[in-house]
Length: 364
Image (cartoon, rainbow, N blue to C red; front, side):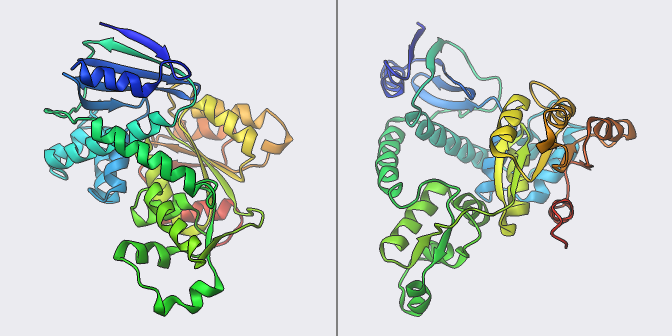
């Protein structure tokens, strides 16, 4: 049986409960203005997620510390030749970089994050496609989303309180004089100390999360406690950080770039499609653009040329093309499209940072 609704009327919570209680098998497909995702069920148990963007599980495994950047580099290189057409997590298993229990943990993390995200959506459509099955890695036994729904509801309630002090993940926390003076007297748990010591008045919550490998909500929750104790405050001054637009349909590559630039105090904006990149560029006017060549809708070359032709404000914005191809013809295509530089993926973090600083005029 298939059914459909919208997020303004028949809500996502009711549909999730209906699928769970009815022990349905199929895919719950949610479509919004920014894209779509599918949450797969088997007999009412959640087994997999398809987000519509590449290598989402690779990003989660990197964030959680299940794999290293070096592991990902090796897998991405082999994806071009020996394992062409295979997903990153499949290659990591073949290379024995991860085992199936680790992959299962990553899938569970992904399902939990998606359920929390779904409950926060304000608009869009949702429908259930009966008997649809995932064509990729899924949990064999599945996970009961009832506890996730309760946990997500708690997160939403806590977020509404946190938002009173922390407007969004781009806000920058800074230690107060009281916090610095009383640092020796503060009693904190290990995770809280890690967050407190990482606060430098430069990193935003997204960068802190990436650097510490702690999810954004947990970082915000901890910092919100610091704010109530007046050890930390949110910078109220105008955000003067350099804005970098990162355009790549691979969440793994996006995460690698975030890790490479996490300590540098940049404001990172992300997009996974060419259309989204064009919109984000015109809305935010970035200081530099890191642009993948192969995007799901239009090529990075077309995005680059479109930006160069769209107005004076984009004539001089540095655009660095990122590609898994390193042939001379590909580099020439990038140059013809108006790119300033061409980097082959995967890349060393230090090389990327050096190239970004060079084109932003920040020196070494």
